[in-house]
Length: 163
Image (cartoon, rainbow, N blue to C red; front, side):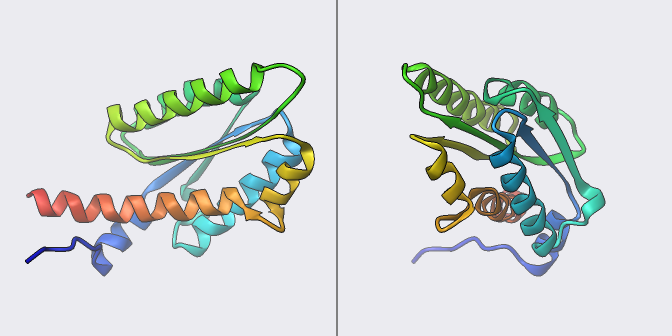
């Protein structure tokens, strides 16, 4: 026999009263602004009040972990969504950024026991980025917000399970 942990309505309401931060790269802003908009709308639809959404802009994808680290360390922040777009160029520079940022964000999430949704597009060209920021592949910012909401709700359920 197994037990499945799911969030109750009270846990969902409690998770939805939390402040959520969105860290957005300004580089490739024609993409990242769409990701941010999608994330905001998904959070609001998921029950997070607009005044409980904190948006922080950083110069580029490389700086996402710096801002995320400061934010997850704040007691008032329940979780972070990191949004950016790294488009492959003529060198392997993109691979180094993508790997470092993804590893740093995951480690921050584990170290602080708070969810950080990974919304860094790692694409080969601008067309792929456009498709993933509201085009025919959806909006990855929206998907990240939904994942974060799910993790916040699960976290509340797991907290009560451990009590």
